[in-house]
Image (tube, rainbow, N blue to C red; front, top):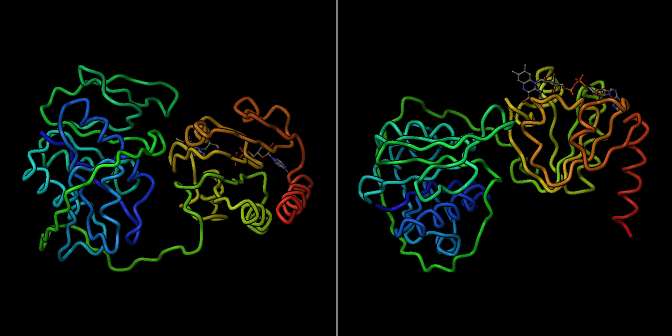
Length: 318
Ligand SMILES: Cc1cc2nc3c(=O)[nH]c(=O)nc-3n(C[C@H](O)[C@H](O)[C@H](O)COP(=O)(O)OP(=O)(O)OC[C@H]3O[C@@H](n4cnc5c(N)ncnc54)[C@H](O)[C@@H]3O)c2cc1C
């Protein structure tokens, strides 16, 4: 009756979303008098003992052919294999790109019900709160299936220290079946990962064109922030799609979100409204984003940004 948790990592470095899923899994396990089995696939040099501290009672580190790169088919096969051996009745997956691809496949393989968009621990009757209507409402869902999978919204659960000494198990699974095959991986390097960033500087159509993004990047560099953008900006290829935040893009929850030349459409807000502090720069005082902002600057981005950059530079050098 254990709680299985899929721990995502990047080249051996466990992602923040992985630690969040571990904390959620341990709290779920404690409430149900059971333990957490963390599965980490192709872990490279990941610190497996640290996973105990973050919530795992047992860590299953899986290696094997077909596991060098993430594919939803092979990874859900591995998770299901461990879930079966472990007798898991619950599984916890973070709602990252990979997590969202794995969770439904794992649900089919385990014969489990799945709730996505989960933002809280289940109550005593195992009903659970989830987002609905693009984060504008919440729903409470109770799964009727015996096995249950909770796919939690990244940044919705705090990372915790449990100080558990985890049992480490090395496992080999060869030829995990997958209908897809990764032939090439192009990674962005040296950039702060948007989903993990504490500070985000974001630009919209008000920035007029890709040639003006130097200012956004410069401010982000000085602050140690990630860069993001609105959907039309990535649709027009001014910025890569990996930076698109919102209902159809990435959901983020940084400590500070600076939105420049973005109107604040509900579809955009759906991905950023959980930010701790929102600062909006827009030349239109009626821009809807100001209603969601903690701080607002009514002004032309092309006048405000150079001043902001100069101030940030001088503060940093001081
Ligand atoms: C099904 C669906 C899903 C969608 N999903 C998303 C999503 O995930 N993410 C998303 O972002 N959008 C999404 N959209 C699009 C969304 O509705 C808006 O069209 C979009 O967010 C607007 O982008 P924008 O604010 O960059 O551009 P605009 O709406 O054109 O706004 C530009 C803003 O810049 C301001 N501005 C102009 N010039 C300056 C200047 N010099 N200085 C300062 N301010 C200036 C303007 O006052 C304006 O407020 C979706 C739409 C649909 C229908």
